[in-house]
Amino acid sequence: MSYISNPLFGVFLSLLVFLIGKWLFKKSHGLFIFQPLFVAMVLGIAILVVLGKYFDVSTAQVYAKAYKPGGDIIFWFITPATIAFAVPLYKRNDVVKKNWGIILLSLIIGTFISLILITLISKAVGLDEVGIRSMLSQSATTAIAMPLTTSIGGNASITAMACILNAVVIYALGKQMVKWFKLDSDPMGTGLGLGAAGHTIGSAFGLELGSVQGAMAAVAVVATGLVDNLLVPVFAHMLGL
Image (tube, rainbow, N blue to C red; front, side, top):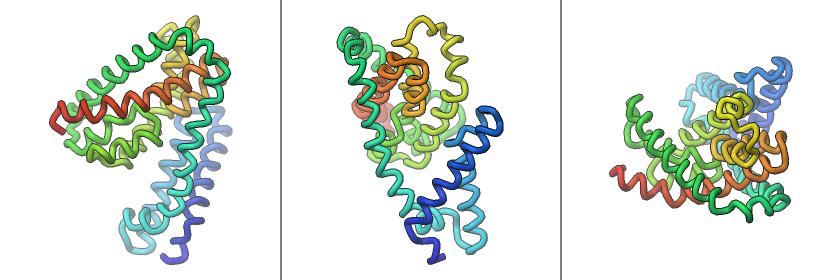
C-alpha cells in the first residue's frame, strides 16, 4: 500500500470522484441525487472500501495512510474559500448595516432552535452521546463545524458528512423551499436561509438568485459559524454531554 500513501493520491482521488459527480449531474440534467459533492462522498468511500479489501486492511487504515495526507491538503483550502464569501458581503454591506440587528437575532434564534431539533431527532433515532455531539455543529460550515465538534468530544467525520448532506439537500430543493416558505419576495430572508442551512453551497446558490441573496447567504455562513462556536459548547454542557 506504500505506493498510494503519497499525498497526491488523496488529491487525485478527490478530484476524480468530484469530476465524475459533475459529469453525472450534467448527464442527469441536474437530478439531485447526482449532486457532485454527494456523489464524490459516496464514490470516494466506496473506493476506499475496495482498496481496503484489496490490500487486506481496514477501511480506516486506508483512509488514514492513503487518503488523509492528500485530503488534508484540500481541507486546508476550505478556510480561505470560506473567507472569500466576504466579497459579496462587502459589495452589499449597505443591506447588512441597515438590518444587522434583525439578521443577528434571527440567526441566533434559528441556531438555538436547530440545536434543540437536532438533539431530539438524534435521540429519537438512537444515537449515543458521541453521535449527538457530532451532529450539534452541523449548522456551521464544514471548516468551522469539524474543529468545533472535536472540541466537544464528537466525531468530526460524522459532522462533515452531515454538513455535506445539508448542502446537497439545499442545492437540490432550494428553489422549492423558497416557494414553500414564500420567500420569493424577501431576498434577505432567502439568502439567510440558504446560507444558514446550505453553508457554502447554499451561498453559491444564493449568488445565482441575486446580489442581496448572495450577500445575506455569506453573512449567514460567517455569523452562524460564530454563533455555533458560542452556543454549541454551552448547549452540550447543559445537556450533560
